[in-house]
Image (tube, rainbow, N blue to C red; front, side, top):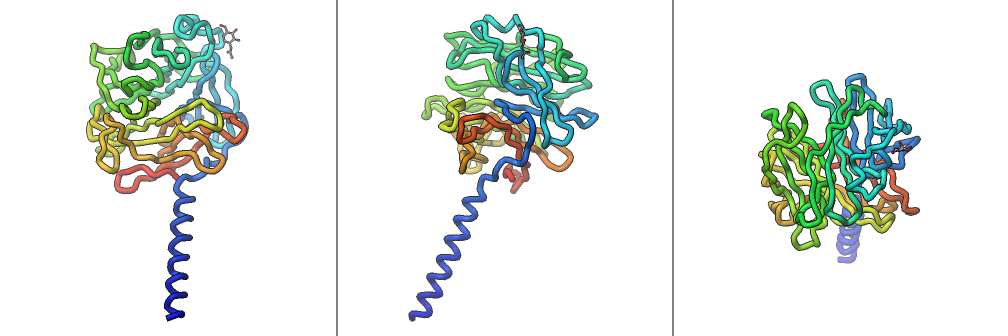
Length: 319
Ligand SMILES: *[C@@H]1O[C@H](CO)[C@@H](O)[C@H](O)[C@H]1NC(C)=O
């Protein structure tokens, strides 16, 4: 009896320690990066020559480059001479937010936002370039704007080209949630007047932003950040995902909840000294799909996080 009891205790202890080590391994630490890695709201494109170009929130939109995805260096601003067309939305600030960089049909596209914190008076602009590097970008003007009376917010843009070659821009932050509009692939600008709702958090103060849509096989994945950014180590941002067979949704999480009703499967959240990981972007590299995001260290500084993505029954898992 005593022996059996001790066996049971051992089995229980073993099970508990396996469970707790599984829990600890649930969110991997960010992969090693070196150099200039203070970033907020990153997105990355890999050029045909193999250079990684990272765009992030900063004055005149900031750029960094890497030849190996590990060592990063400052690479100037998208608009070294400023972007005066944005200042009516920024209250004069040079700080431009959440650039989305990609390469399509031999050109680099950069959608980025101009706003002030907590205001829905915001705009998304487009710039294009033949190299993606600092000073090479041409302003293509306004894509969409929101006003103080809109119940949505024109920030945090992301371009997705669907399986039929149609272009869409998802965007949004708080209020009634994440939206999507069709774009004209010839210009990268808005086409028609459709405004499609793709996700919202009606019971959580609308705390959802930074949509990023990827396509893999028959699935479209809608990645989003829940809760609060921008509070240093007290930030509660976390990375969520849902999927749909249609680019415009409905996106549904692993448990079957609609993202329009607050659903989302958590793929990364604060752990240890990694606080508020979020504002994710995804790009496909030779070895894997790659998740990039920012997180805050204990001292409140924002850093670049990079992890790889594998798929488990067509659901993304970060490692
Ligand atoms: C941003 O643009 C302004 C001109 O409006 C310029 O004075 C400033 O040096 C630029 N800053 C960066 C980081 O490019």
